[in-house]
Image (cartoon, rainbow, N blue to C red):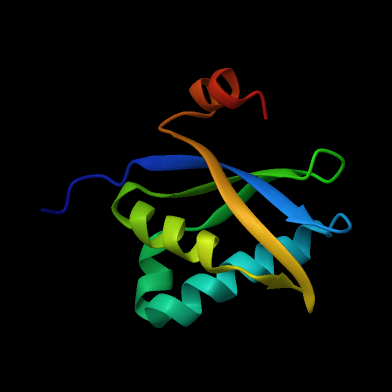
Length: 106
């Protein structure tokens, strides 16, 4: 029941008219998880922005394997970042960064 928490990595494509700053993207995802699942759910997610390539508009998020479906839903629910229209799409999900980079070339 209380086994170790295994990380999951999500490759995300950020769509918008202009590239967003890293902290704006992080805040948008964090707020989406908070809005959908509350403080308790957010604390269980273990959400972390691993990297963000502003030029390619791609990011890598890390979360707990137990919260993967929550984070996936929250990412899909983002419709704006800093008041500007945006959409986030999950490209790939993996248990390691190495496998994720092979799968999606992020």
